[in-house]
Image (cartoon, rainbow, N blue to C red; front, side, top):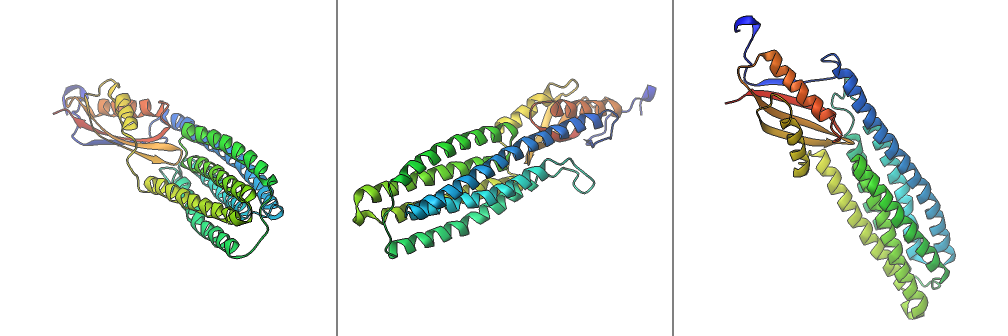
Length: 325
């Protein structure tokens, strides 16, 4: 310890601050967790709208498939029902992910979102298998050709699904939700399967009896899209669960914010991981080695506060302080 009560900052001072660890920091954290809950609420509301939309479209598709004699439309309706179940899981996932940290989950509940997406992806494959089996049965079993009226129905479905996919995708990018990203992809997939059904039915309607199997081939194409959709969703969720690296641009933004804090001489390690609707940061900063421990602690608090107050959706920061060489 030096004169005047001044102590030099020891190498390896780690400042991993938690709610309530320093006076006003608890209020700051509460505000950030409130923002996470609000993002969860907005996401859940949009997912519920998607559930209502898919229920209505599933009913219309099944009715059109049965009365219009088309397996492609029945397959499309099956995917819409799967979307309802998947959306329910996504709704639960974002609701749980929006909860603040507690004693049992000090880093929050963000992992609930990618876990829900993993279950959603797993449900895609057996559903695609069932639709494929039904389509093959349709090829082998004689049945009336599809009716042309179903084409108008599919045009409306493609338009509605494309628009809703775009809306959900924009919202997902805004709040950083893996579940909403998966929702947007599945709505886009539904639009693609409906477009494939349109082509198959159109060929069967205008090509005559010898082209009747085009309807079932369109359903098989829909299955391929469902499987591809499931693989892509599965990959994205696994990356988040496995703490895959965030984009370099995001890490650079974190570094830029930390470097602007007074007293920070340099930056070493910086690790950022996505957890549901927010990001967790582990960063190492270098300060003047002759500073007191108290001053080093203040700088660490300032770095943490700067990141939490940024628009980057950061909800937890661990700052490790090292002396300048």
